[in-house]
Image 1: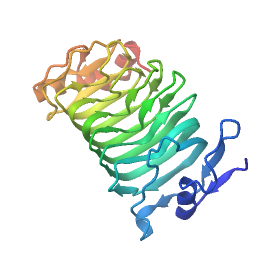
Image 2 (image 1 turned 90 degrees about the horizontal axis):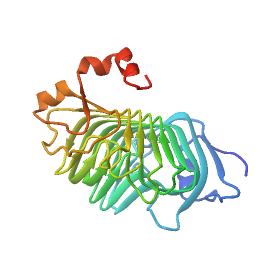
Image 3 (image 1 turned 90 degrees about the vertical axis):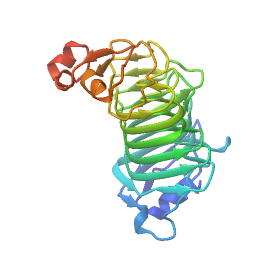
Image 4 (image 1 turned 135 degrees about the vertical axis):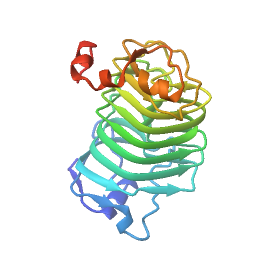
Length: 288
């Protein structure tokens, strides 16, 4: 398969509409973004529904953003929104998504399902994702122990009934890994919310920093001993319903917790100054 170069908004939409196919396991698409793209500059395509999440919407693709930025993706009106509904193989990497604003009736995330050895790496999002039932920053479900989300960041807000800052849920793959990722901002989820992942997968060297509002607050993950060398900074406004879920060598900012009037069981207290100290974090086993 020849390399597909995307340098303008129209080619980008053609790609996601399947004009160039969706790849196969034997022959995945190879795609590279060659320019920044801003949907706000193009009247008539500003509101864009990417993937609808149909079960047949499978992608085998290596999508390299080339460290370019896609700005002002806006969607409102449908039940489902995913940039890639089912990432069966390949990757999404080296991309900035700026001021992304998604409103979906049921669930929304960058990817709905990850399978096989699919991974997301060095993708950085600013914006807001809002949905009726489930929301996640990067992937709704990870279905293989080979799946990874690494070196990714989300800065903004999630709002739903159930939400995970990086990933919402694993299917049958507790060994899928979230590595060197962070969520900075606010998660507002009426039923349950986790700063990193809402059900069991391994989180390593990742952190949450912000506010979590929910009847069940999990600073990192809701499954015991699935996070290692992670930390949480919970600011004033966080619900006083932090669940007691013990993790491996994980810290929380005790100064911010005191200011917020909350207790954070299951994690080890560290002061704000200690969390900012590279020598302290290295001695604690963190990669800094």
